[in-house]
Length: 47
Image (cartoon, rainbow, N blue to C red; front, side, top):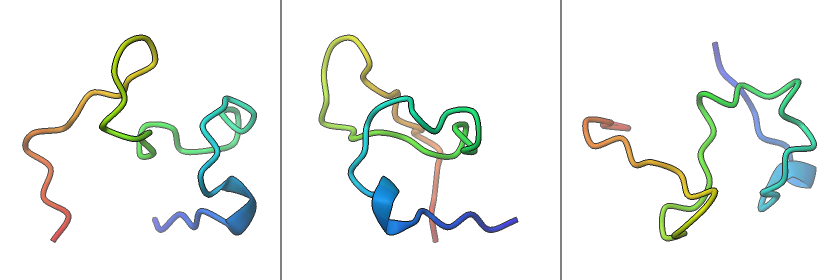
């Protein structure tokens, strides 16, 4: 299934839409450190 991230959500890093978003598929910025940093998926190949 395809999910579309609409313009109001682009760049948003809060938890306002956790209830309705496929959060297992959406990750925050990887250059973030400390609490709230997302783990990289080393075996993920988007191509």
